[in-house]
Amino acid sequence: MKTSQNTLFVIDDDPKSRKAVAALASSLKITCETFASAEGFLGRCDPSLTGCALIDFRLGGMDGLQLQERLQAMGSALSVILISAYADASLAVRALKGGAVAFVEKPYKNDELADAIHEALEGGTRARQSPAAQAENRQHLTTQ
Image (cartoon, rainbow, N blue to C red; front, side, top):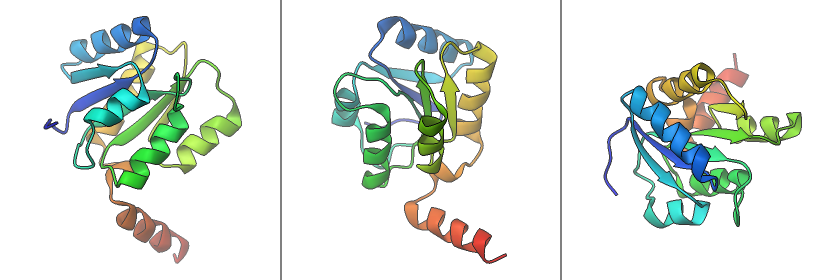
């Protein structure tokens, strides 16, 4: 699947949520593709994709953190935002330590989600970097 770096991939098993995020992306003039499951997304994904994966934590089958880990293991260049209606602090910490750009709780304000999406797509975040570059940045930070 070829795409531009400004593509938002929405992985959420709730059709209303997918539709709402797609409408938000359209209003922001961001290309958006939606998927009902992690497995469906992985079936079309390759490590060279750029952009942002907006992943709901609770999915049927593989959950959002497992998908985030799978993308990282693949060497994916996608930035990740996790969203959840069932958030707790430990879930947010795990997502962020795993390289997520943001963790957004449902229900969210459109401005809050739009800011996270823009940061992920345009911010040159560490989630877009290769795992080797991430490790180098961590090493650099710890030695200063």
